[in-house]
Image (cartoon, rainbow, N blue to C red; front, side, top):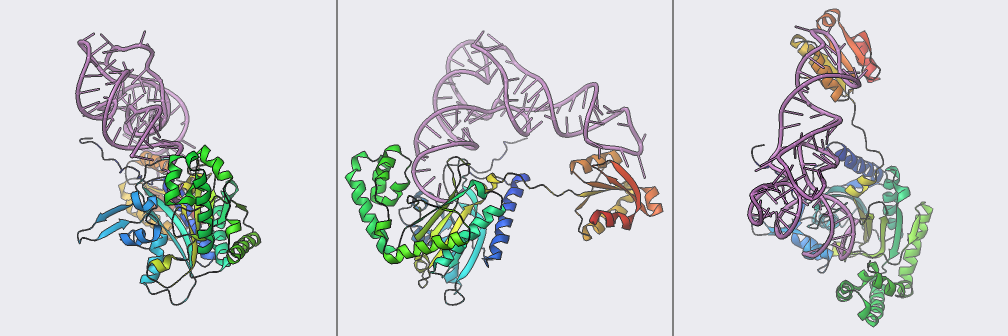
Amino acid sequence: MASPALQPVRGTRDLIGEEHRRHHRVIDTARRATALYGFEEWATPVFEDTRVFARSLGDTSDVVTKEMYSFTDRGGDSVTLRPENTAGICRALVSNGLTQSNLPRKVFYAGPMFRYERPQKGRYRQFHQIGAEILGAAEPLADAEVIAAGWDILTRLGISDGVVLEINTLGDAESRDAYRAALVAHFTAHRDALSDDSRVRLEKNPLRILDSKDEGDRRIVATAPTIEPHLTPAAAAFFDAVLRHLATLGVPTRKNPRIVRGLDYYSHTAFEFVTDRLGAQGTVMAGGRYDGLVEEMGGPPTPSVGWAAGVERLAMLLSASPAAPRPVAVIPVGEAQEDAALGLVQRLRAAGVVAEIAYKGNLKRRMERANKLSARAALILGEAEAAAGVVQLRDLDAGTQDSVAIDEAIRRLSA
RNA sequence: GCGGCCAUAGCUCAGCUGGUAGAGCGCCAGGUUGUGGUCUUGGAUGUCACGGGUUCGAGUCCCGUUGGUCGCCCCA
C-alpha cells in the first residue's frame, strides 16, 4: 500500500457478505409482513429542510440539539440528514396532497438514518431503520394493528421470544399536562436528592426522569405518581381499548408506567420492544401515537401512530445468518470451450439456476475456483464432451460425476 | 459531550522484568499438464495505528492524536 489506507468515517461501516445478508433478511421479512397488513412502501429523501426535524422532534430533544448532521448547501439553505423518518413521512403526506383522501394510509419504510453520536454496540452514526406508520387514524384499532405488525416481524425473524413489548400511555394533552404538574411537584420536593442529570430534566422534560438509570433517582421514581389517576376518562378508555385489541391479536404486553418517549411528538400510546441481549441498547423497536405531527408539517389534524426499529439491532439478534446461494460452476476445459461454456451458463440462469463460469486457469484452477464459490455442482465441458453433446455433471458435495446430455444436466440442476 | 479497556501479517492472536517479530488460519507454488474440497512439501507478506518523549537500545515505558470497543447521556 503506497499511501495510508482510507478508513470509513467514524460510526459508519461497510455491509458486506454475511452482514449484508442479515440486514437484508430483516428488511425483506419486514417488507413482506407489513404488506400483509396493507402497508405500502414509501421512500422519502435522505435529507430534508432542517425545519422538518427542528419543528417536529422538539427543540429540547438531544436529537435536535446535538445529534443532527446539518449543513448549509450551496444555495444557502439549511438541510439535515434525516435522524429518523417519521417526520419525513408526515412531510411527504402533506407535500403530496394526500391528507384529504384515502385515509388512513399505512406506510412502511426502510433506509439509512444519521445521528452524530458516540458509537457503541448497536449504535452507529449511519444506521438503518425500518418503520411502519398509520396516518389519519384516531382509533385504538390502528395502534393495535401497527404494534401487531411489528410483533409479527419479530416472530417471523424468530426473535420474539427474547423480546417483550412494554407499553404505556401518555394520555391526551389534558392528561399529560395534569400528570406533568404532579410529577414536577413530586420531583421538586425531592430536588436535592436527584442526580445532576435529573435536575436538568426537571426543567427540560420531567417525564424523562422516570427513565433514569441512576440508583438514587430510581428510589424517588419508585414513589412518584403514575399517570393513571391523571388520565381523562377518554384517554383511559383509549388505552384500555388498545390493550384489549392487542390481547385479541395475541400480542403479549407488559404495562410499564415508566415508558416515555424521547421525541416530543408522542401522545397516548407509547411502547418499546425491549431485549436484554444487546447490552445497553435494549430497545429494538419503539414508537407511539403522534396526533399533532402532521399539523406541525402544515397539514390538517391527522392523528397517526407508528414505530421504528433498528435494523442493526434486529440483525444482531438473528440466531442463524442467512446462507449465500450456492451456484453451479460451469468449467470449460481450455479456451476453445469458453464460448460453449458461456452459452451453457446463460441457459442455466434462464432456467433459474444460480450459475457461474470460472474465468481463468486450467481445469484444476477452475475447479479450485468452483470450490471457493462453494458451488454445489460443476459442469465440465471439454473437447470430448463438446463433440459428444454431453457435459460432465459433478456433484461437489458427494464427489460423484456423470456424463449426461446438456438438456438433462440443466433439467437436473433446476429441479 | 464524559469515563473504562484495547490497537502486532489479510483474519484470530502470542511476544516474559525494554535487546530491532512469531503461530494458526488464509494466500501463492509444487506433489497430480482433464478434476475441487482431504493430505503433503515449499514460499511470500508487517513503516508492531499515527506523532512525540525517555533510553546506548522501544512492539514493550511515558505523553498526545486517531480508530475500535464497552458503559454514561441519549436513542432504534
